[in-house]
Length: 458
Image (tube, rainbow, N blue to C red; front, top):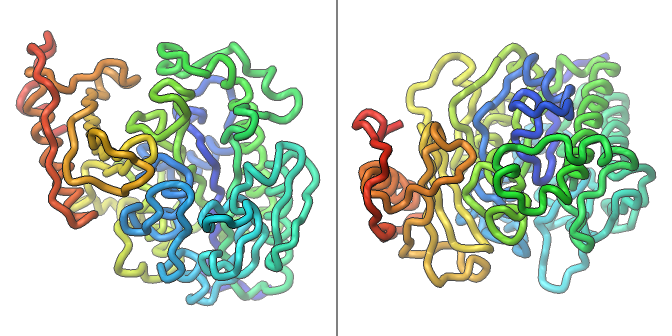
């Protein structure tokens, strides 16, 4: 059988999955044996963060390697610009067969139906079996996608299984019909996102009961939110996703493609279960921005745990680098491949996060500190950015990993906030091309904790 000169690439993309739903991040429920094994065998991006904790903006960033203010998709309901370089266009231009299966959420023109996507709005993908807003065209046991002609296609089984089955059929068909042509497959699930019209997390039958009331992440145990109602179902969805991930890898192995295929597992954002605002995301907190991410396959096997902070915008150039394809100049991120060679010089010591819809917010997260600001009185739905912000949150993640104690305004932490403010203003200027101002939080007496000078820059 002819062997493609470049590796195949598969993206396994979940929706709203917390990083700590995985065993390698401390979850004791055994939800993710397939993810955990791949993280050990491949490269585990231990500190991985979305650059925008809401569906469409994060998805646009993963397709383009650009922050939301550059894609224009700063909130849900804005279609991805047709002129932007995308992963599909880059891989297709390099001779790859490209395919998209699942949830798209990047073609939402005013008045457009929730499911079919015109060819011009597919980001350059050739083969197509997707729904623009899958949560509105399907339920957990009633999966409807749309083919390249815009016709509805009903797929049997639980929704996760239906999409995974479709992906395995594509991989099998491609490896048989075009064995010498590499493929790029983007498989995008809805799970473990909630079912919108019911505000529910519908796991496969019999799965939610396994996990309800057994364990909660520490932030949810402290803050509650809707976690007591929803966490069991959420865990059941994560479990089925992990089983599907294992099936995809099994299919690659059975077709002798595992050693020729790079697989990326990641998610668009996390889930805080109504603990930080009145819904599930759109905040600077770890539960909202930190996601499970790994790469496995040629170039990544044996890469181990990478502790540098990695953003969603770093993933597109990483995939292109793995395939030997030059990344388009506009991409904001950088490939993690040099990190696997020990080339760490110049890698940023922080990630930059843009927040929309609930507010116009900006944040930086370093190894130790989290600093977040918002634009007072501004609607995050109407405008992508602001000129003036105010300090909102400061967290010491070493002392307070659950982010329960807001240090913003404390005199004892003013030097930390000043350093992070300067860092954040620099990123706003670099990424958004604007000079912004940040007002200090109302000063409060010094906390009993003190920050040593050497801790400020951590």
